[in-house]
Length: 129
Image (cartoon, rainbow, N blue to C red; front, side, top):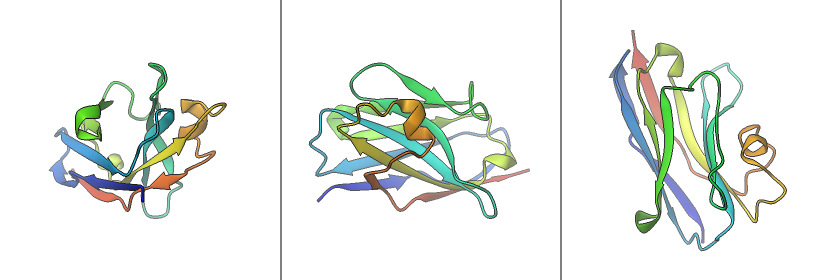
């Protein structure tokens, strides 16, 4: 059974940093795209950042470019989202999701929400002003 479990959320002041982790289990695929998404109350879901396992392509939403970084540690089966210079508008539930055997889906498609094969339950991030 494939599972994605997020951790690292919490309460932080504006300007602060958090690092979210998405730990996968039962995930034996070589070709996948994994991404971070967020949803705030009353707002549409937003694809924050997506990365492909088969190449170096990454995608960042304009709202987080220069502040967030997606990375992975394959030995730990974990994908990270480093979030710096946090703003109150970054407050949301963040979750990770994956698409396997992704082609022809690209990181842009994934972050646009074209398809999710697996997703986690999410972790709350609250940024106070």
